[in-house]
Length: 272
Image (cartoon, rainbow, N blue to C red; front, top):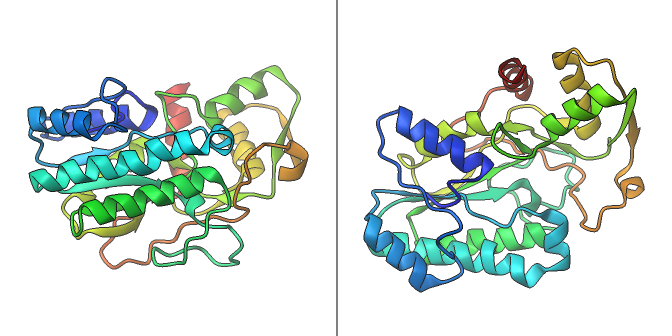
């Protein structure tokens, strides 16, 4: 597995190890931009499957350095897929709700047209296409959204800290998405390896705005802090974000994650 030291990667590694698999994880020591390095890694490990979590995840940074982000998210995904294809093993490629433009009034099914509005989404879509082209019939695209987990910086922990220190926080209220706990996502990624190739939507069920998410975090954590809604324009971040990128599971037989509120309650209960 690539990206094994990341927030998602650590939960995936833990799940695999606890459920009878023998995971081998790599992280920054293998440069996925280098096809020779990727090939040598898989030649040594000789995996039965590949879960590709490594990625450029800095959305605003991608806007300023799109070529660098593309080398990781686009070309890197293609390199990993090509190596998996050479070994004849299935692969899961992580992707994002940001491949959509967010203008649809409806939730996005797996076959909805993609139209990313920012560099991060463009590079992740390039990675989807590169992986599918390099390993036809062998790649499962797992689009997810708004990840949080115990092993990395995330919105839930940021809000808990801010809420404990302030009487009020300002949070964007015009972006709607699907919060997803990395621990809930880990078993779904493993399950995809046994399902047909193609695109899957793997985000927490239901949807909420960032401001609504913050309010629920405070409620579940017992924190007395007000949430003042603001617009994305008022926040003034460099990269555009889709206004409504809610992912819907329409594919028959696809795994479904539980409601985001249930997952959040368990995460906070463990963290306190």
